[in-house]
Structures are given as C-alpha cells and as structure tokens.
Figure 1 (tube, rainbow, N blue to C red):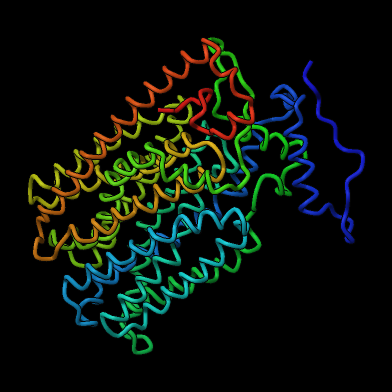
Figure 2 (figure 1 turned 45 degrees about the vertical axis):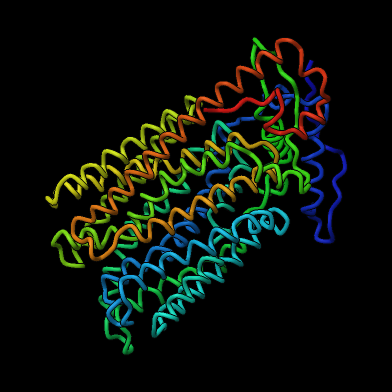
Amino acid sequence: MSAVLEKPAVVEVDEAGLSTQKDVSGHSSVMASAPEISYASFAHLDEKKILRKMDIRLIPMLALLYLLSFLDRGNIGNAKIEGLQEDLGITNDQYNLCLTVFFFTYAAFEVPSNLLLKRLRPSRWLPIIMVAWGTVVTLMGIVQNFQGLLSTRLFLGVAEAGLYPGCAYYLTMWYCRSEIQLRQAMFFSAASIAGAFSGLLAYAIAKLDGLGGLAGWRWIFILEGLATVVVALASFFLLHDFPETATFLTEEERAFVIFRLKYQGHMESKDEGSVRVAQADEFEWKYVWAAFKDWQIWVNIFVYWGIVCPLYGVSLFLPSIIKNLGYVSSTAQLLTVPIYIVAAILAVVVAYFSDRVGKRSPFVVTCMLAILVGYILCISTSKPGVVYAGVFIAAAGIYSAFAGNIAWLSNNLAGGYKRSAGMAIQIGVGNLGGAFASNFYRQKDAPRYILGHALEIGFTSVGLIAACILIFNYMRINKKRAKIVREGGHNQFTPEELSSQGDRAVTFRYIY
C-alpha cells in the first residue's frame, strides 16, 4: 500500500512564531523525496486546484514583466515614425545599427543571468534587472545624437538579457512537461499584447509632442521607462521564488508540486515499466557544459531563428511597413493592434491543444507553415489589403510557434541547471536572429520590402528543415532507448547514475 503523507508533529518557528522559509523548503523537499512516496500518496489532493492557485499567483505578474520588456525593446519602432530619426539626424544605416547592437549584448548575458537566477532568487534578480533596463529606457528619451542612442541600446541589451530566458526557465521550476506550453503561451502572449499596447500607447503619448519642450517620441521612452521602474519596485514583493517556499500552498501541496517535477520525463509505460529517477538539481559545472555540447539545442536554434527573425521583423518594422502602404503614422499605429490581439489569442488556443495531446512538433510546424504563407502573400503583391492580410497570417503563426518551440526544448532537457543553461543558450544565440532581422527592412526597399520578406521566407524554410531533423532524431533515439530498456539494459545503472545522465539516460523519453 502506498504511503500516506503525515505532517510533522513539530515545525521550527522564528521569533514571530512563523515557520521560516528554510524550514518550509526543507520539510516539503524531504516529504517529496521520501522513498515510500508515490503519486498515490497525493491522490487526495486536487491537482487542478493547485495548478489554478499557481496560475493566479505566477502568470499575471510574469506576463506584466514581459509586456514591459517587449514594450521597452520595441518602442524604438514607434518612436521612429514619430520623428526620432529626423530629430537625431541619423541615417538609415545608423538606425539599423542601433537596432542590431541590442542583440549582441542581449545574447552575451543570457546564460550568466539564468545561472544567477536560481542562486539569487527570482524575487530579487528579476526586479533588479527591471530597474536597470527601465532606467536605460528613460534615458533614451534624452539622447541627442547617434552615439547616445547606440550606447543606450547596448546597455538595454545587457539589462534585458535575463528577463525572458529567466521567466521561461522559472516556469519549468513550477510546471510539468505536459503543462508548460499553455503557461509559456499565456506569459509570452504579453509580447503580443505589448505590440498592440505599444501602438495604442505610442499614439496617445505622441500627442504630448511639445510638452516641456520635448518631442512626442521622447515622451514615449520616458513614460514607458518610468512605468517599468515602478512595476519593478512592486515586483520585489509580488514575485514568488520556488515551490519549496511558496506560502500560498499548503505543505502537502508543496511536496506534491516538488514530487511531480522531480520525477518527470523518465519512462512510465506498460510496455517498458517505470523507473523512479529524480532530476538532478544540484549545481555542477558539468551540467552547464553538457548544455553547450547538446546537439538538440544547436539544431533547435535554427528552428528558433525561423520563428524569431519574423517575430522581430514584425515587432520592429510593422508600423513602418503599414505606414509605407500609404497610411498616416497615427493610422499605422492603430492598424497594428488587431494583428497582435488575434496572435495572442491564437497562441493560447494552440498551446492548450498542444498540452492536451502531449505533442509539440505538429503545432510548431503547422504554425511555421502559416508564417511562410503570410510572407509569400506579402512578397507577391503591392496591394495594401493583401500585404496587411499576409502580415496578419504571419503574426498569428509567429506567436503560437514561438511559445511551442520554447516549450519543446525545455521538455527535452533534464536537470535543473542543464535546463537553465540550455534554455539561455537557445534564447540567447537564437535572439541573434533579431540582429539579422534588424537589417532586413531597409528604408530604400520601401514600400515593397521584397528583400526583407524574402529573407524571412528563407529563415522560416531553414527552420522547418531543422524541425524535421529534430523530429526524426527524437523518434530514432526513443526507439533505440525503448529497445535497450526492454532488454534490461537500464538495470546496469543505478537511479543516481541515471539522474546524473539527465536527458541522455536510456530511461528518458523525448517529446516531439
């Protein structure tokens, strides 16, 4: 008979009479790791209720943080059509360079930031970097020349580097493989909402043109940067760290969440049986190096580029693309709104079904095909209605595919620190695609932007090929491992050795 959890008779308290965070963490971890504990031990708990509690406490705050991040990263596109380029006297090539340099520092600092996240606690590290980038964005509102704008974009990349990979990894410390894409999509949809909100906000803020002797585009940076700093200060008190220390969960619920995460990913089927293998969560440099040497991460980066290049093409240049179709700047800002709203809704719907069926690749590939169709429409004609429809279709595919691809790789990386480093490599190197995309849409190519659209088609096509390579190899490796297990090959390893091997263990099954 499975063991039934018992609460400890004595809980150490601090001077205020409350259990300390260390105590809370320790009791829950011990309960979850006890050898006699199984899923049946938690049968009396309502798993859906626990997930709802986690969703309410975690997702809205993360979504707000990422909304502000994407808003502050992409508002330069809105500022451009409100006169930034003319006022600073910068050329088209200089403007594109300011867009590009952001991604170099952004990519360089992602892995260190993700490793620091777990060691310094999310409720401290994420607000610190938010204050930093909010300050940088505010200062962008007072730059006077090309050198000033270039410098602030470099520092913005440093400060923002830890936010998205940090939040994406943070969610994997709370949710299992079969639940993660929906939460990634709800959180990432904030980027889509940011695109819509950016257009509306820029339209409204631009009306402040002349106030205090400042141009409207300067107020876009100043007000949006100050809003980020205010939210960052509040997030010190609103962010939760880890399941082990979650005060909104009971001790049994904390133990259950830890147990689910600890033993996920390894085989549990009638044909192969089941082996209880815990995920390795202790820090060792070998797990970081293992991420750098993992073939699947580098192949997945090509999938990522096939999605992120169109993503940044849309976020940085959509207002300009629509304006060059013959609309005035205020109308161009507003016409971006429905594109982003529909993309956000579709991302959540696609994620829901992907989690429900336990598959990633069919949804990622289908959405990437939608991106292809959208850009083919854009490149095929100069008719404003058709181009707008093409961008609409492409954006709908982009946001759904992006969340799916992040979830896909995170599902297939086992061990806390390998997953931390691996996701940071994926997102960091992958976001160099933003550096490419920053130079796709040259002003001299307006209004057709044939080169830009063609490059997006090319990157998406390469991404689709990389996705097929991943699918084929995941299927091949899973079949090979299943054969080894059926022949009893896994018995030559202890559970500790299998844990140390992570996703390279013969008992681990890739999701595709």
